[in-house]
Length: 156
Image (cartoon, rainbow, N blue to C red; front, top):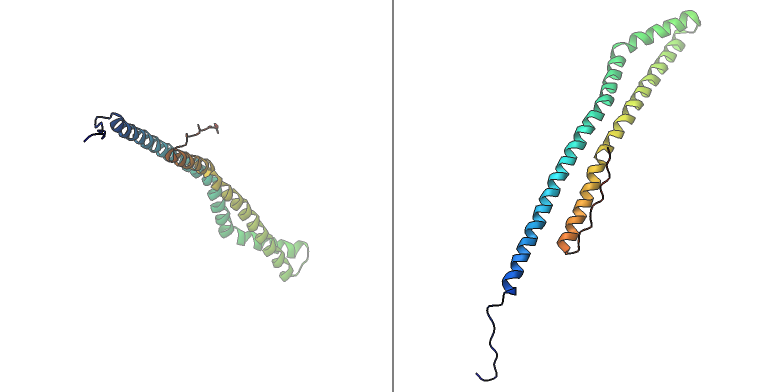
């Protein structure tokens, strides 16, 4: 018809745009997979370091338990007998002092072991911080904002 325009069906921009989108999504997925691999490696390294840090407190607690179960009753009886013979205390007073001393020793060993175990949980701090940075990067990349370059600090 007169006055009508015809469409140009050979417009190259329609084929180039999907190709760029596919290429961009491919690059984004590659980056996300690379981040996941690095995140897994960091968690694995933190886990190994945490297990090494957990060994000493667990051994301390086990030794404290063995000492308490094995030698403490005999040592406390000996202490009570010494108090009876040397200080001239009554049996009840001497045994009370021995029990109190044994209890305070067990509490002190338990507190030392517990305080060292509590510190082991901080070993995954790096993994948690890096996970948060990675998720924020992925969100920005999916949103279309330019991702901010990561600043890595060497923990040595």
